[in-house]
Length: 278
Image 1: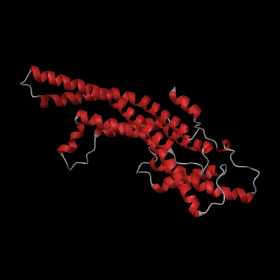
Image 2: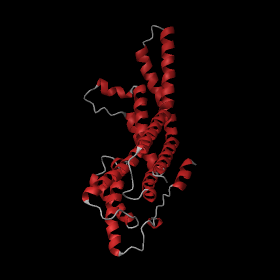
Image 3: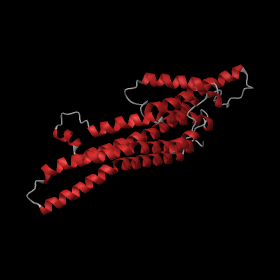
């Protein structure tokens, strides 16, 4: 339900015709003079998001492809946007940097969803003991199977409920409230990042909570067993028990992953709208 409400506020069916920001009474030369600054500034904002956004900002996606996507989208919307006119190269560079910063901020906010999942997977793998392979074998690649499982599921869930469309739509909606060249860096940017970072830590706690609670109970049980039966070798008995109990709790944690991620994406979209005054 939260995701549907979010989709109603952020129109995933983005239409270029929704924008009527450019004054149609301008002459052809004046419209051309506005088009190119709006093109480069909007491309900088979109590219900033694509550089760090989840899935699209992955290292396997070539940078040239991301630049091409940013230019194509900017060409599609620049004709309806009003940009600053008569700018010198030394004047437009700070504006491009500000637009790039805004795009990177939006991309980082969306990436907090996966950062929270990765943090949860790191704690779960450490508590279950499956991440000790790197400690015993320093020549291994240090790959954590729990982390791989969480990340693959997170990507599938994110694409499944349309998280990528929500992030891109929220970015495009920012052009309504913050036209190209009008973004000013202020204290609200730091507050926005702090709020999203806090939500990412909360997401990690929610995802890892079932396994962490199960591991805590297993540790207490092993401690009681060691006190009552001192002859029992706690290390040889405790490790298989923790792994088996962790796998059961991991199944419960995976079931919670989808609704928690949807809530986090909805929260990020609302914060982006609040940052840009939508």
